[in-house]
Image (cartoon, rainbow, N blue to C red; front, side, top):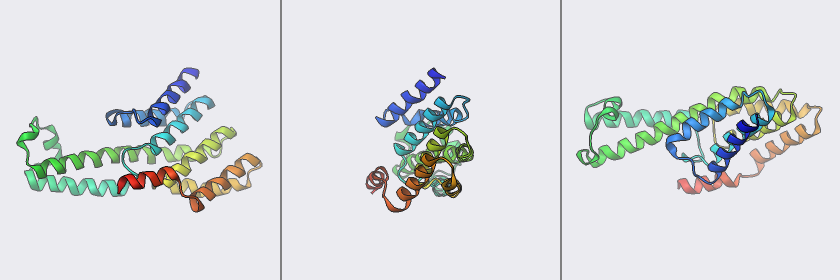
Length: 207
């Protein structure tokens, strides 16, 4: 468990310094989500913190809305078919030099790849929500606290499935553990009354 937790911590450090290449982002996110199932609470904590950091430092902006990225990808796929006469899969499979493509085709292809990559990332996050919600019922306070923190970040970044988790958080206000009640109250205050500076920064970058 020591090695697994250290691996997660190392990846968290890399994410914080924006040193995770886009080409491995999906794999890193997938592995981090898998570690949320780990039998060791230390590893689960490190994995939850890693996913939180990957969201905060993501390259796709402050609104990780799956339906929006999916719709944009479909629009761009239709645009590429109109420009080239081929389906996206055929275009991506072509061993064609960029100099042979029109400016419009290159721009549409680049945007398609961006939205497709974003969609894969957000789909992974949505797939993790059920597991994170399950940890809200854990007997381990660290599990519950880190799950609360992650759901708060997911909701702030508009991950659609997180709304279910935020609703479940409210039930924990009746927890016998004072630390859990305080964490829930802090989360709701942060979500509805205190703007997150990291999200504000992402919004400025997106302008």
